[in-house]
Amino acid sequence: MKVLRHSAAGACLLAAMLLAAGPLAGQDARTRFSQHLGAVHAARTLSVIEAGVRDGLPRGLLIDKAMEGVAKRMAPEVILAAVDTFADELRAAAQVVGPDAEPVALEKAADAMRRGVARALLITLGRDRSDDFAMVVVSLEELLDAGVDPVLAEDLVQYAVSEGLDSDAVLRLPASVKLLARECGGGQSADCWARAAERECARALPSRPCPVQALTEAARSAAERFLLAGSTI
Image (cartoon, rainbow, N blue to C red; front, side):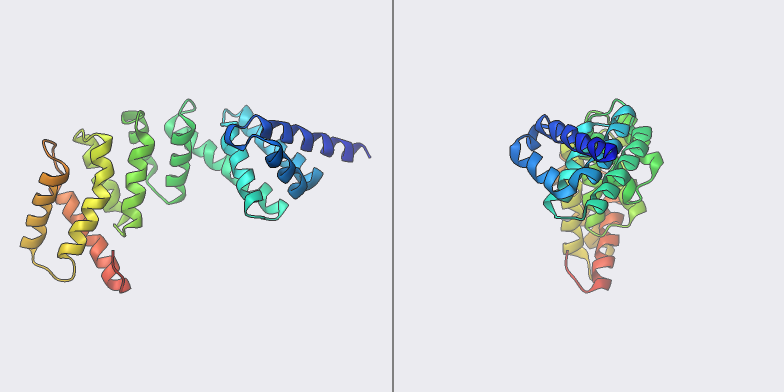
């Protein structure tokens, strides 16, 4: 009976936390969470969240992860495991971007590490581009989604950052890569790649140092990947 009372108290406390969770606030979120997880799993999930908060993790990110599982109607034990895994990923990300990083930067660092992005690069970006870290990582993820070889994608972003490209210019890199790959992929000559890269630099990155070679290599790798897959970019 004591265990049940403790679990029920945990569920109530977590439900109270949901009421103060910004976008998730409201009676509906509290009710859905409590009903879906039940007292025991709600209390265990609360324990994982509170342990993360004691380690300096943003409470809102952990609650959002739990509510994502509720919205997808995942089993309570699956939600608990997902929140626990996510908390560990955020702890690892905090070691890369620092414990005082904004929640969005912490979440993007965790996303990037999950995708296998080099830890050394993320540390560099966290140090040198703390103000727009999340946007730089978004650009890197879009390059990977476009089929760019991971090493070349990382090289392109690192080169762009080292040359001082601002966040808007870095965010334009994936679109430039896709344009080059569509135009010159499929066996076009080296001249095609060179002309297209120079033109794209002039269009997308005027008055900025342009990573022509890195851009071309990234676009070639994307074109080769999609050619082998028989799909289009």
